[in-house]
Image 1 (cartoon, rainbow, N blue to C red):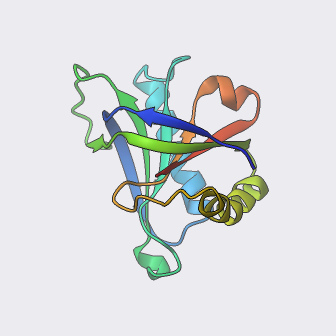
Image 2 (cartoon, rainbow, N blue to C red; image 1 turned 90 degrees about the vertical axis):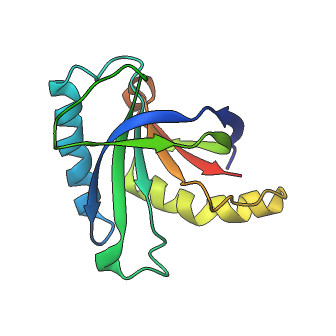
Length: 150
């Protein structure tokens, strides 16, 4: 499993959240969010959509697990829709893994990423979230990225 190191800049985003067990509900939220993104003219070639699992399901009861979906927006973007909230994403150094955009590949990646990083002497920065990153050009190739803060 290969990865690239990337320095991301901090950014502003619009987001939706669901609370509950990770799984099919996350996919449903993502589809709802993409509808909102399209309806608000934000689904462009340069759009960056993120999925963020806010809690560790091994230490957080399933009913309390939070999953956010976000889209990066410019500083001058103005939104009053109560369906979304504004959030700020921290920047910093990330290990970026490109993987097939399938449930099986994502699950395998979650199992393989941390041993790989440890073997390379990299440590998770738990103060920043792990990001699932989706950009249109990669999705057309059936790929997505998992970005791990290190």
